[in-house]
Image (cartoon, rainbow, N blue to C red; front, side, top):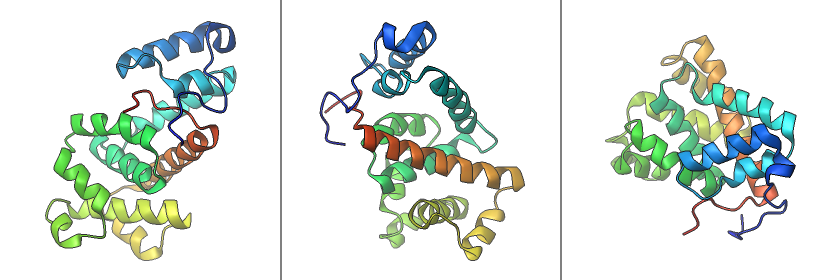
Length: 186
C-alpha cells in the first residue's frame, strides 16, 4: 500500500454502504479507536458479499484455535505479506492475548535469528510459524511440517489453521490491490 489517504475505491458513506454495513463500519471504527475503518467502508460497498465475508471472517477469527495461536498466525501472515493494515490492528489484539512486544518481535524475526528467538517461542509456536510461512510462500505445507503441526492441533484445528492463514493472506492481497488506507496513519 502506498499509505495514501484515499484508496483505489473511495470510502463508502451511508448511501454506498446501506444502513447495516454503515452501522457495522461505525462500530468497527469505534472499536479500533479510529475515525474510520477503511476496510469496512471499502468492502462494505459490496453489500451482500461484505456481510457474508464478515460472518466467515469473524468465525475464523474466533474459532477452535486458541486466540493466542490465531493472533500469532495473523501477525506472521501480515509480516510475510508486508501488510501494515493487518499489523496495526492485530498487534494490539495479539498483546491482549499474551503476545507481548518481545514475543511479537520474535514472531517477526523468525526464523532468521533462531538462537535468540527460540528462547521465547514454544515448540507449538515454532510449528505454527513454520506452517504459516510455507502456506503463504509456497501455497502448501510440507509433510514434515504437517506432522509437526499435527502434534499440536486436532483435525478440526488443522483445517481451521489452513482457512485462517488463507483468509488473512487473501485479505492482505485484497487490501494491497485496493490500496486501502491505514486507519491510523503514522
